[in-house]
Amino acid sequence: QLQASGGGLVQVGGSLRLSCTASGRTFSSYAMGWFRQAPGKGREFVAAISRSGDNTDYADSVKGRFTISRDNTENTVYLQMNTLKPEDTAVYYCAAVSYYSNSHYSSRDTDYRYWGQGTLVTVSS
Image (cartoon, rainbow, N blue to C red; front, top):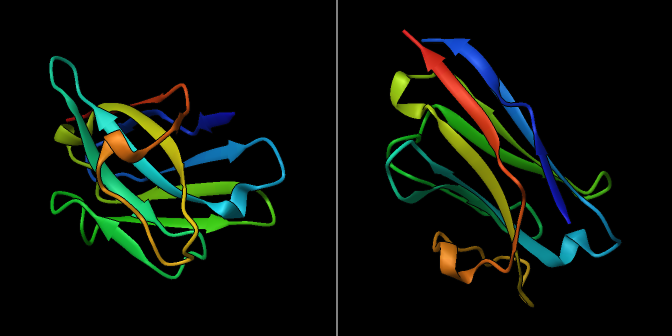
């Protein structure tokens, strides 16, 4: 089970840090991803991180502004969001996929098996 938190209302240029905590003892077996869905739009990839945390990937729209990280001892993945823009407004979802390899991750939502409930981020101008 994945529990996302940290969303809220922030002004343009501000920052937020999202957290996603997993229950269970096998968190380090899963690559993690963040996706988002804006009102009236489809779900889109934001960032992904491998099991070990050594490999990451970002959507072009967030590169240089967002950072994904994980703490396997705390069963938590984070998304640090800086320099937020109105177009970042969306419900953000964390997701998990099990990989044998420590280095794999995915930007495809169809690869992910487990999903959190979402947390709303609203960026006001």
